Length: 464
Image 1 (tube, rainbow, N blue to C red):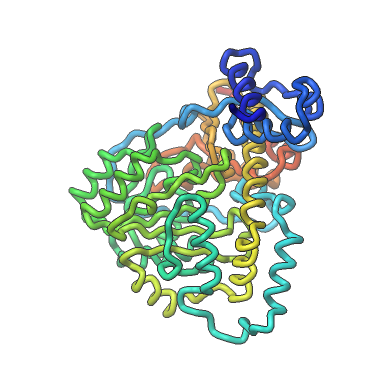
Image 2 (cartoon, helix red, strand yellow; image 1 turned 60 degrees about the vertical axis):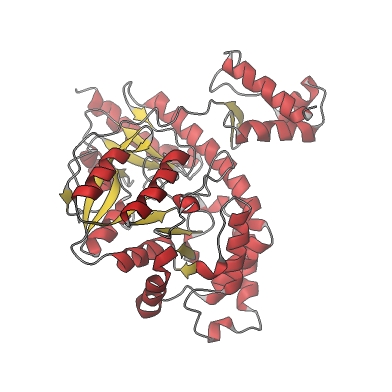
């Protein structure tokens, strides 16, 4: 017999699917729900948690719970169609300007959503440790306890790792850089998805690498185009994000991930996988990375706690497969390790279960944020504008037809707010009418800046 909270959640889902409950409708409070169904508060809470985990309910701070439907995969995103060709990454990439509000531009969780006090205690304890970690040079591959605790953490999520194969880095970008340096040289071609996270394009430009953008589709990546490029061009690596990609928020299917792992082995081409948003899944289930199906060691899997815990910690890692010796040599020669005390603090935070509990709460909060931003933007923007429906992370990808988002970004900067316009996410002449919005902050905090954006769009839309 099904547990009571499962039965109740299935009942609510059935009412949503039949239209008895509408998307955006406010649910009754937990106390009223418990009385209506003659169940305990703990059962009511478990019911609402089950609905949240399955994408049918989101919570909004100081407001309550709202009905929603799991988005059809990538249904609200427009994907550009083009023929892939070799390009040089643009160097005209935006960076934050002192004095501008970056709440919408930087994909980051609001500090108040992070366990700052608890984490600070772990950091202080690590620095007060009698083991004197701060008086010794760190290991070339990182603190063993951190690698072991990361291994156990991801094992519980279905990803099998070996602590001896993990290399600790100063964040995910450093891991990606080391991976690129291990398998490429200046002038080589690297495949990227389109659109592609702007900092990755900047990194490729800095390393003097050329890019070949592959079109994105509602199913994930245009695999036929990818195979054609690799079989007709000299490609040294593929730089991909399989889960909650920045800026679109979409993820590849399991079938595509399996195909990519087999593809890398067949053509002996490295895949550098940026999985920094992998654990920020709104339904509480971490989708496995491409690395999970990598049997031949051609996938260099990179991640960090920068998006999930605190960017200032600068603690990341990679599993470099057959390229581990090259990555370790690069870390020793050029990059260096993050502070050992910070490694120890993160290790203990994971080991004690605080990290997993924090992730669970954070993912529910981010699901609510994304839903709140979507509803608010849909109510303010003109008809015809499109907003992505991510299932993880905190990036929203907007299409504003006939709006020049380069001009919009300049105008908003004059008003004191920074955004990331679509042209920054490509080496081609694409996405001029797109922009990326961060929804890591509570909607109420971001409304003044969102209103400036919407007001400008509405004013200029009316002129068309």
